[in-house]
Picture 1 (cartoon, rainbow, N blue to C red):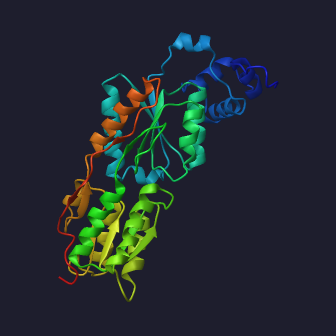
Picture 2: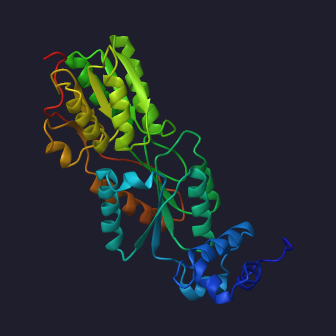
Picture 3: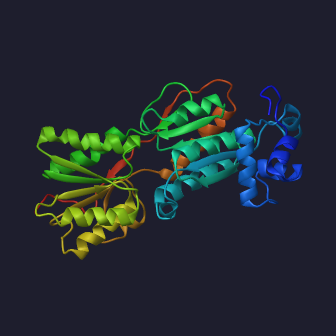
Length: 340
């Protein structure tokens, strides 16, 4: 195919061996073709950098009326994390007020996530996207302006340029929790985290490591956010001759899994082990003992992110980042001075 010639729907249909109607269904996310055929068509469109013509855009309007959210997390963990259910509910609530839909997909890698953004943009399927779990030198943040595809990042730090962020001060949040445990007298603290490439994971681990200045020995166990991984990590920690006196988990489900392991192994909480979580939910207040957490209004965070994205979509110029509401430390029954 000559690079000078703009690829058309008819060209894609010929290359894919399907009708132009099938190509139209696939590119616009409509039913009528199998998933295998749809993927083949989308791959061809991406390979040849297909873009909707200005005439086609005029027929359907300049906006898709849809916001995209590609989540790179194990699918099995999404249904168990209150953070995601609350965040998505907040996003949908805000979008519904403006008649905008949410397209949610689960991807298995950052490469698949970036391919999804390219596909959405080439087919004009979404007007903008919400991005989570930023990394240092994140390739997604360079890709999105180049497409161009408006975006808002839910991140751990204030950022300049485009895309803007609703940033959450994870350093201050980590200090609130780890400093509290140190003040109670804990000198061996373990952190059971999510993937190491996420900014918030590194920031929290760095805050714990810095407590060495206060004679606190900190250790980070990296997992995939799943309760199964948290269970395995906790068994390893509590099977040692010298156990940590406090364990902090990245989310509420992991913390509950860790609490169950402690109970299974006869380790009293909080008498012999303090347990805490960086995420809160209704369940953490109902289990016994109830779990100390950092509490934030995640539903409101979703609403704020969606409203911010709609502003970004409607703005010809980049918008400055905004600071999200800081979480509050909620003290419950699962933490106490060591050996209490």
